[in-house]
Amino acid sequence: MRSVTQSMSHPMQRYDAIIIGTGQAGPALAHRLANAGHTVAVIERKFFGGTCVNTGCTPTKTLAASAYAAYMARRAADFGVKIPCEISVDMKAVKARKDHVSGRSRDGVETSLRNLNGCTVYQGHARFAGPRSVQVGAEILEAEKIFINVGGRALAPPIPGLDEVGYFT
Image 1 (tube, rainbow, N blue to C red):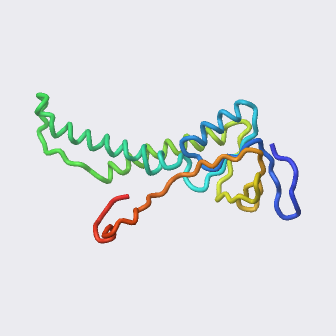
Image 2 (image 1 turned 30 degrees about the vertical axis):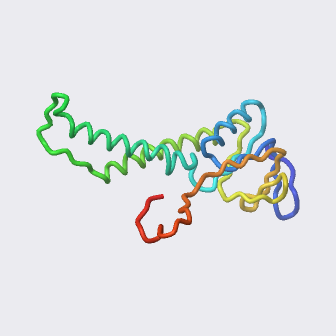
Image 3 (image 1 turned 90 degrees about the vertical axis):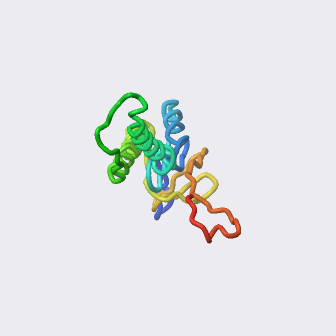
């Protein structure tokens, strides 16, 4: 539901709640609020689904599943199963599967939010414009309740010598 205009330059959109980020809690909260009759704005800067869907849980689990399949194939003889060839792993295919699974999750989150009655999705970087307002591009959104549901980034701790060795984040 769109309503009044703030000033000459920026249209003001009013909502009951604004949710910044579509990670684990954001979509569930949006559904709960919208289903209770509240108007909700959801803002996503980059990829729907947050860290878990895009770089954390989901991709990790797909990679682990591929590794487990290779491990079990290599141990087939222990179970009385003969595989008459060497087991190899096609990492391009493993990555393609991981990308497909994460992509389906990401698309599912986005579709569910865009089709949610009472919810408006904004794509872009959110910045606070005031105590109860957020700016996304040229639009200013206002709500009594603003939920910050942004993701995480890897941080290398300040450990002496860490920059001299290879490490994963």
